Image (cartoon, rainbow, N blue to C red; front, side, top):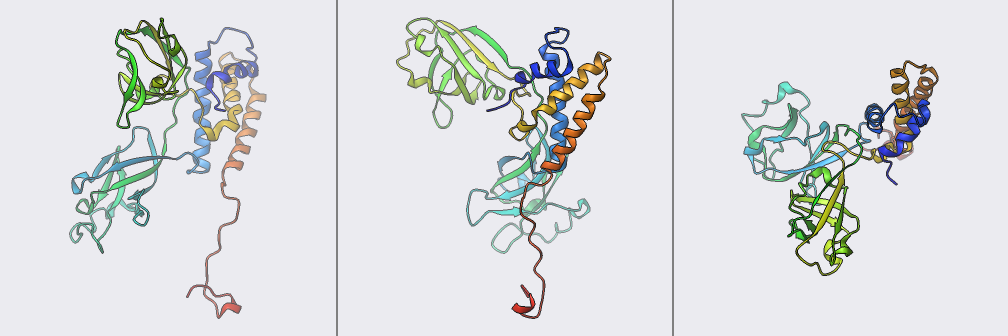
Length: 324
């Protein structure tokens, strides 16, 4: 079950000695928890860069696509594949290891073809750049990368009156079951949030929670359970809608890989609170240091078996030689 930042507020109050003291609001404590999460996220990415990896798909149209915008929260790239979903054609594109060599093959390079060359790539500013540009094929690519930490925040609910034409329907490329709501102002940040209608008769059957699974526009979002599967909807809509989601650029849940170590955020927040209150933090700091050492030790290696030793030359199968 996902660990929400809201569920860590009470433990942070207890660890810091605040308990029911209202001196700090939940939002202030969540701010400290988020800072602790950012530090823990750095521990994960420093110990093993492949612990938190996302993918980004894009398609080039040829040499004109030699410069590609990176995903918004890009932090560090890991690898780039061409034809990622075509077995037998998928291959890894080489990274430009030395920036000074970016033009080394520009004069003699020829377009991608059987026997031709793949381009290499590098990152510059907030762009992925292929070299040499004339070798960029028209093809799909998949970039694996580490995203930046997403700050934690409490869920926010916006409530508004239903428009007379708001209705369950279908939207998006796959005609997914959706809510079509004129005043919703949906954004990508709403994905994972909920829609709670409070509609008058005869549409009261829709007064349940719908989880937002995709956003197609400011007025259309795919939902589960299917809004179109509830029954026969009668226009005009009368009542209200409440949409509960994380503010843009934030999340309400900590990353899955960090769930076993959620206490780190609690102790970090407790230190921040007691520092602000000019209270001693020695015991808490020792506890955090011990957790930090244990976490780094546990997550530094994700592979149990040892690495395969290199094959070496020898003087026969009995002598231990491998590949010639």
